[in-house]
Image 1 (spheres, rainbow, N blue to C red):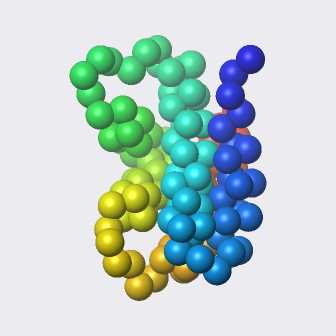
Image 2: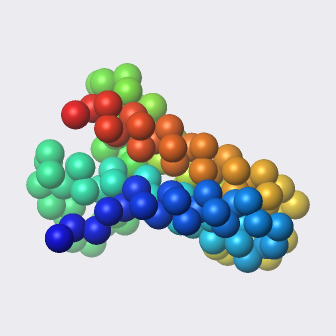
Length: 120
């Protein structure tokens, strides 16, 4: 059975509502992977395997962002925005807006998942 990537968003929502930094950082991460995992699975289903040796995160979001379809481009933009937030949450030592970033990541992931679902 395939992993249900959107379920990670449930965890992200719970963590975003907490008051501690670790929860907020993890909320951003889980929101990102809910969207990324879903987008990657769909892209592979539509276009085949991702080439070896590439940055899969960039490959997935670029494939959507470079599409001629407006909704797919919006998905790619949302994915890149989520990626930026995730990298910052995972690696930056001091983030003054982390509580806001956690909420923003959840909203962006919700939109990205809804847009991916509407492609079907």
